[in-house]
Amino acid sequence: MATNPDRASYFPAIEKKYGQPMTYWFDQMEQISDRKYAEQIAFLRENHGFSQAHANALVLYSRGSTNAHRVTTIDEYLEPFDDTKRATVRAIFTAITSVHPAASLVIAWNQPMINLNGQYIFGVSVHSHHILIAPWGNDVLEKFRPRLTDYKVNKKTIQVPVDWQPDVALIRDMVDARIAEINGPSGS
Image (tube, rainbow, N blue to C red; front, side, top):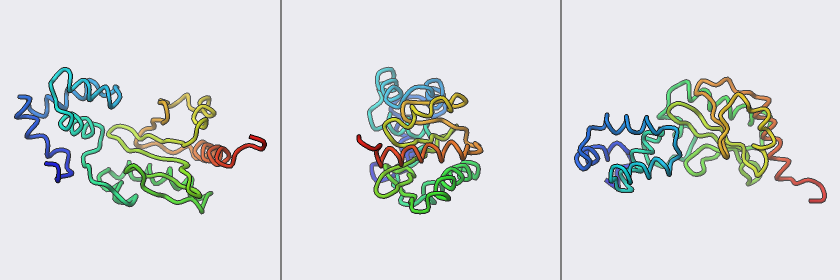
């Protein structure tokens, strides 16, 4: 199994070892979908005796990562997702690259990121029911919290709908704040 990057390749073993069909396990994951990754892993391990490998495969699959394959381009990253998610992600990145042509779209940690002069500026992560946008920086998210009242704000990310019409001004302002942070204020 270790050589097959498809997380579903674990499903027959999960069904056999833990005695329930995958529909049961998907239902379990739906019930704890609001929990963090580590909490979901702990739930499966502590309550159902899952091994780390089986728990990881099920949790990541349930979060929309159906394949452990490493991608190298935005097209590879977006390939498993539907047209709506692809269009939303592309619109987010276009909002940035259209005003920062020196910025490059790269893959880091198997996620698409905007990099400018060797510094990460902004990232995106696509999930089953939402997209996470991630302005990089120490204080960028906090600085913009007053403008984010319509969104679910996590510790380092902002959750937007998969069919989000990007708030271009917000995205560009966050990117500009990150660039200013990188350049540093005078005298600091």
